[in-house]
Length: 326
Length: 259
Image 1 (tube, rainbow over the protein chains, first blue to last red):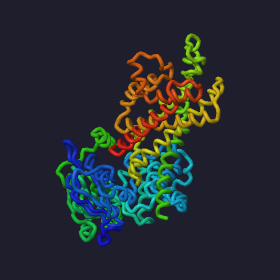
Image 2: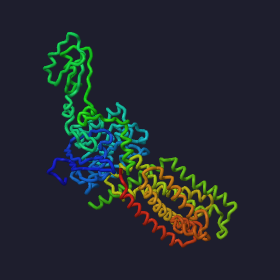
Image 3: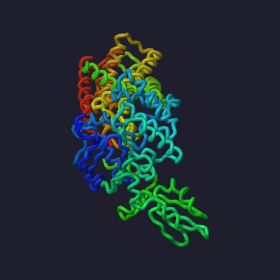
Image 4: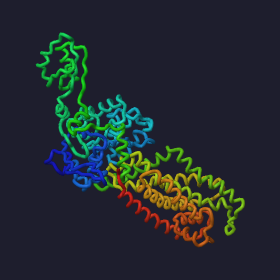
């Protein structure tokens, strides 16, 4: 490595991408360390994909620069590309080829040596659970399988960094959960730095150990998921108590940071409600329980003072607009 | 040691790009059928239709055989230029992006793609040559080798042209323009369907600058023995066009935007 003293695998310095009227990425600086799972979280059009494209040397910044694995994205683009695997927002494997053929072609493109090539392909297929479908043409794959094939492809050359651009966009809930499972497995098995973009809070929460919230090309918050959420005082648990229920015991629970009484309901600010509700219910008798977690929208609203306008599922429009611009 | 490895890796990359094109070519059945069918339609309908009332008096060949070399070139023109401009699809479905994010230089991508296009053209031409045998065109083994050389040269030049055009296009709307303003003129002005010796001057000028003219003439020379230019001139001009268009294509790929 060129820069052994630094533990940071990715260093972004004042990265800016300006289109005619729009600043897609605005003077962004960021460091991402070895083995981090870093999430770039933001609404569509926030500049997430543009950041990935610049780090992957597909797009030149207007100003500023970055190094990936010690290589400058402007001076050493081919070495940067050798160090990274990229899973794009829209699956980009060839439909007419089989899963195996797609992987083989990419192994060749990445210069994976012949003596390890087949082993690497089998391992990648195994990792994403596609071994049995490897001889099928990709057009016969489901959306989730296509994404998983992309991940296998991104790993075929043992990259240092894997970029996942909206890995579950457009997937149905069960495929999304399967995808999360595979990504978590990946984090466990491979010593890999992962950078993923998403506009799903729960996704970032579940997968990442650090999150940068990005809006209008700027990072507006940077922290662990837990601390970001605690900015909002954690989850809200809404209890309808039975008549004679005594709430004193709740005051001593560590997981509860705030107790309010509103309209006959008890509102608790709870850290990690999913896990702590059973504990809470041991101390009070209730008629109903309702828990809500802070969403990206809540965090975003708090940070920017405006809600995210949820666009139609896709990011496609974002892509389309970028496409049109060139 | 380091050198042989890096050379092998370079050829692996070209091989990968080529392999993908050839596999897709064989699996895209409709493209394969359509692109073989059109030249046959020309050969049999135009060839027999005009053949019944037109005779190429200067040369003692019937019209169908006369246009056979032209139809071979036609199939190369269509398949090569289309192949190149199909790169818009690769871009639309992001396959191109996945190649560009690999450590592969743009000129390597261009080379691999071009080899793919040349292979596709050669396969189509092989089918036509078999049809030629059936309609009674005879060629020696030497003529066959020469035909392959000419076809590969023409295909290289025109695939480069198609890739160049495709690299500048962002939407499929431009595709129809290529058909009208590139493919058809290249074909019609080449003398594929008529002798080029006694043309009016304006047409003669256009025919002279069309690279396909030289391929048609060369193939007529090789297969029928009735060329208008010498084979050396044809070969020279085709080489020149190949170099120029190859360079243009490489340049266009270098400046092509990835996203």
